[in-house]
Length: 107
Image (cartoon, rainbow, N blue to C red; front, side, top):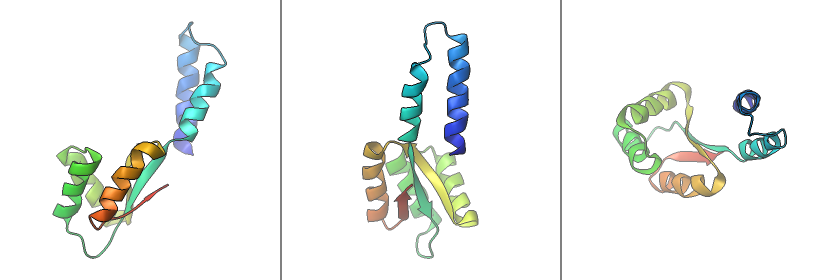
């Protein structure tokens, strides 16, 4: 929820400095942000760091450093949001991660 508030605040600021946007445009921006979801991957005891990193590279489109950081966050905190987007975009990625043994949910 905090991300949505920050986005709306930023969008409102953009509207203030863009004479081509109207107040009604803010409603459309709010509707878009409400549909944004995240794939959250949870820690487990059976997947190796290399396997998790490879899955993030292959299915999430991460760069190597980003994939490593997400794997470390999962190991340390128990979970990490690895990809954001709408449900249509995230569903096949989440399914691929789960098919490869990762525990993932769309939240």
